[in-house]
Amino acid sequence: MARRSRHPIMAGNWKMHHNHLEAIQVVQKLSYRLELKDYDECDVVVCPAFTALRSIQTVLDADNIPMKLGAQNCHWKDDGAYTGEVSPPMLAKLNVSHVIVGHSERRQYFGETDETVNLKVKAVLKHAMTPIMCVGESLEEREAGETDVRVDTQTRGGFAGVKAADAAEAVIAYEPIWAIGTGRNATPEDANATIAIIRRTVRELYGAATADAIRILYGGSVKAGNISALMAMPEIDGGLVGGASLDPDEFARVVQYRK
Ligand code: PGA
Image (cartoon, protein in one colour):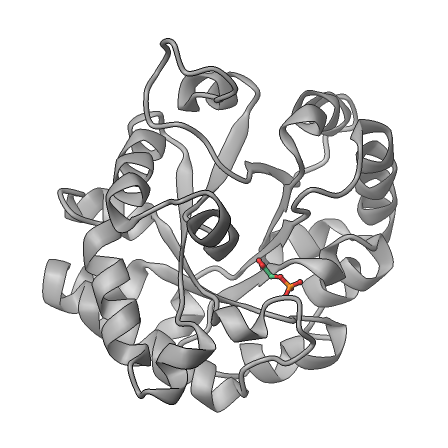
């Protein structure tokens, strides 16, 4: 089956939680709970706040932990007079491998648009990191039957000008806004169907090889209790996990969803 050739990803999005001391503890506890084979079976990514990136990088390096480090956002310029922003080369220098781009909270509260998301996706790829580009519909859009159009538009907008080889390496996270932090996850069937739409858009843009290669995650109230059912769906290649990733025990169970 096609999806078996795609390596799953479980990414923890800690949002504005865990100072750097707490973050170190969570990563250490998580690494005690995970076995080496868990990292072979899926990419494990933690995305702490900027203030914890350096500390966690040091822990991962010192203990040779094969966990990957992600950031939650970045600017698209390499440097410049942009007070308060963090650039892709700064992240790359910290061994950051993944950057969440265009999370719905950033779109909703910080004015991010498909255009700025696109600039960020390209900037992250330029510095050899993997963007985790978020797309997803609001409850109003879902109820109006606009889900498919919404994710198609966001995918096209976010990938404008991105080459096929780069697109194949990128990651998309489908996160219905109504499912984020609400305890109300999309059914595995609904998530699968919308991710199939996103993959169809990628196929239209880049062809079948890229569509088969690109990993598309589901996010929105993922937890240990629902991840196996989600991962049983052929289109779902992993999870972008918020609340459940803050607790190392719970996140370890998400990573070990096959058990
Ligand atoms: P949640 O958040 O798992 O807490 O719903 C997911 C996300 O926003 O990435």
